[in-house]
Length: 73
Image (cartoon, rainbow, N blue to C red; front, side, top):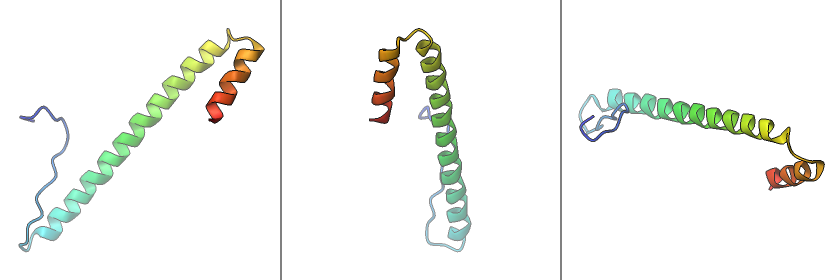
């Protein structure tokens, strides 16, 4: 929080008896971050797809063909 990062901090695992608990906690944090990033990526794709769909209504046939070819690249 002090560094301006709004995310769950991971815990230092260390070498004592609680390291397995901390390791499990860190794994949960990693999974959460991965899911959060995937969700954000999917949201961006949906927004971009919506923009493309709304723009493509005004494209000519040749422009639509160019967009299709570029999207495959």
